[in-house]
Length: 381
Ligand code: UDP
Image (cartoon, rainbow, N blue to C red; front, side, top):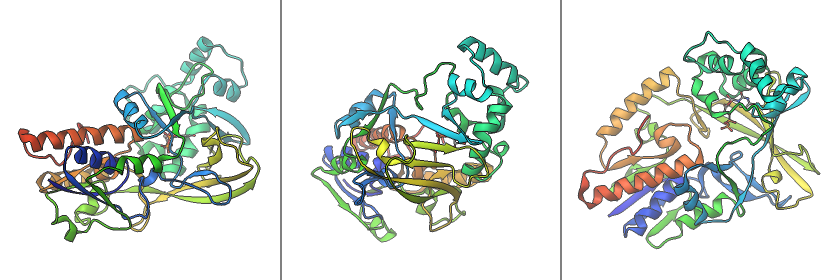
């Protein structure tokens, strides 16, 4: 069969390769002038630092299939992501751990003492948290919520945390040990040569042709037996019901002769500080050494029609719109929607790869006679 794939990020690349390996012809159309989507990495000419052009991406997973897959295309160097946050003129460790608690309350509590202390502050009257704020109050209590989560979240999402789903905070652990690794997953790593090199290798296969700086237009769609769309779900339908809400990011570059932060990411919890965090990219490759440095202040704001969509907002009105698009997708023919934008979800890289592998398996099973190709291969929206 002949497949047209829109988007050369992880979703598009992983599916393209599987289909090509099964003997199909695949054309990948990428509107940007590079592959790897928002994971794109490139060498900064002045400093030699490997820069994550669309913001920091740290690979972490507990999925052995995904871990084996990515290791097949690049050298993954173990990397424990550590984040600090500046609040009220002081620096604390994230995610909230025993040192953070002891620093904030100026105490020297043991794990059990800290558990009891936080339990006293936590709001036990909250059963199933209905929103982000309730989730925080239930698990860490008001002082910690106000210091580390309220201001940051209001800046990141542009609204009160009471309006946001609890699920956003569930991404972050709270620990009663001094372990300050940002993620819990057994595999945490950075690609030695960057993500773009990995995605280029995934796409480097007989049967795959990549067209950079080329949109997958309606005219092109007709040339293929089936399309894989990894662009925004609403864009496929020409925004006929309206636009799904996203947050976008502005990056303000800082050039520095030396070491600006001393770590890869410093969050800024105070609402009065207009940016959410600064990332200093040479610290994402601790095996390299660079005298000069390049860092980025990150500002979050509402995503306009010409901006890059980063975080799906998924509030009630977006969910209503989403349902309309999902219904339209069920009726659409010869197209499968995948990935962060194609399914309008907040997806980490490992989940993106896992879902792309599942979608490719589903498509290949359908082709070999076990039913029609589905519009989606995800279990929940
Ligand atoms: N968050 C926060 N304070 C912080 C870091 C994160 O309140 O210092 C909240 C914020 O709402 C954010 C969410 O936790 O959107 C998830 O954080 P994560 O670091 O996973 O965000 P990402 O790196 O994906 O932007």
